[in-house]
Image (cartoon, rainbow, N blue to C red):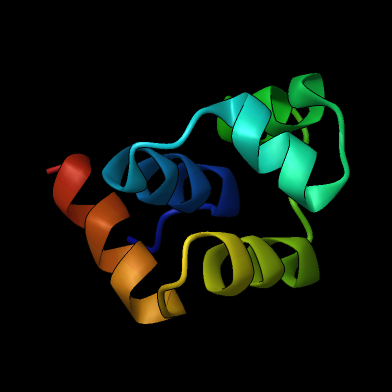
Length: 73
């Protein structure tokens, strides 16, 4: 099963050793927004997810997805 966007963001963020606050500040959103994405309360848009993965985490979508899949298995 393909992990949802918030799960991918959380796994990649943890792998990079970053806080939700760091991601929020660098993406221009409130830390509560990042928290809601990661807890799957609010969906993250594909554009937001891609920007965070590539520009903040400096990884590809494939790399981020693999981290999420491995973390949940």
